[in-house]
Length: 271
Length: 289
Ligand SMILES: Nc1ncnc2c1ncn2[C@@H]1O[C@H](COP(=O)(O)OP(=O)(O)OP(=O)(O)O)[C@@H](O)[C@H]1O
Ligand SMILES: [Mg+2]
Image (cartoon, rainbow over all chains, first blue to last red; front, top):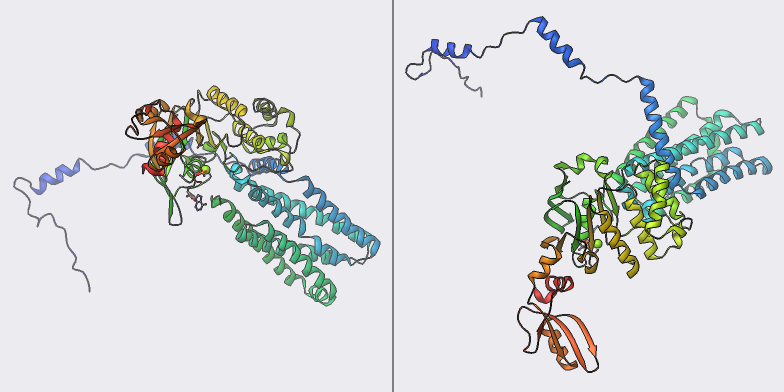
């Protein structure tokens, strides 16, 4: 149905006495706004321009971010226990040792330990909740969310450094070790296992579920090591397929990190 | 400085822990007094910005603390009721960590921590792991950390729980010393903690304000409702059935009882000067409902 259009015509309106159309147009002309001249526009723009924030240079931004993270990481170092650093370092030294002296398969070894520092790092992050310090941390200036993020990134970077060092050392002691294969076999579990652990910990928020993740991963690695055909099939995929796997792993990790930050911290509920 | 709770309601599922709570704090010591489960911790947590109210808001000088965000948290010192520590930290390391979270510089914190360990009588335990601390020592460590950033607003949930009488007195004196330019909010069910130092006492029952006032005005209000009655074992039973009974003092066969009652309970009863403890019994005893 088409609505009947209502026309507005001043001529047809019932105007009160003494209010002619001339009178009205006179009255309205008072409210006419004249277009300001160029000069005036220019002047206004110039005077306002000083209030527009200056675009910061990219390197200044980078430096600011860098400083921010260094500060946060510095604080994170306080709350992450010494045992964490020592244990993970020993794990890698042990890994190198068994490959070097006992001839254990280097791929299996690096696959097994490559996600462990990060997952153990998650354990360090949820420690606060377990030990009842969280409520206090939440009331401090630097928000808990920032701290959790900084601890996770610290553990992640530390993990990547350890993986890189171990890979380099393994390549150096054994000429048969392939650089691409080593990268594949340490980055894939690192991204996927970390992502899955973050997911489970954001759901359950428990110390023990994080421990469970570690044990399940160890069990999986051992069962893979028993049947080398899986690993051989994994090595036979081509580079682009592998790239796809890696990208999805990274995306999954980013997605679950966001989820972890939200469920753990933004929901400001103390149980 | 004006800290204002505006119509705050907090629900846990269907259960309403705090109902439409409004109050205004200015410089001075405030005591939130109420029985277990009254909602003190819930209000304290909302004030400390660690719990979001279901409804209503908290304003500092007219600005919502949710908008102030870290600027608000920068001003507060908070001692939670269930205060935990990292057990493998030494007292000093723990304080350094909290100081860093509060945005203090290293040199600043070093100095401040020395002072606070002195004040809370923990100096000799500075390098001892907190896992070995007694309940009272942990509490004192909690008091120390709350004061690290010299907070303008100090929020403490049962700060004296587990402190021995000597430490309790120390703490009370410390508070009255530092509270001149601060808003200090304490929750407790230990009346003597706040009786003499608080500017205003807020009596909370089932998530609502029952009554507010200075301890003087609160005790004045129940003048003529506190009695001393001398009785024996048999008489005590009937008295306990009929009245709210405070202290019972046994002296041989004679029993001296303190009774809260609107009317003179007995011809032999003598009127007593009410204390804050009587106020607590008067307002929070089941019989008076
Ligand atoms: N996380 C929660 N989930 C469900 N109910 C809760 C939760 N926290 C508190 N409550 C309920 O809210 C009410 C008020 O609790 P609150 O801890 O604020 O009391 P309180 O006055 O501090 O008591 P106390 O003197 O024992 O510390 C209680 O009935 C409690 O059961
Ligand atoms: Mg409480």
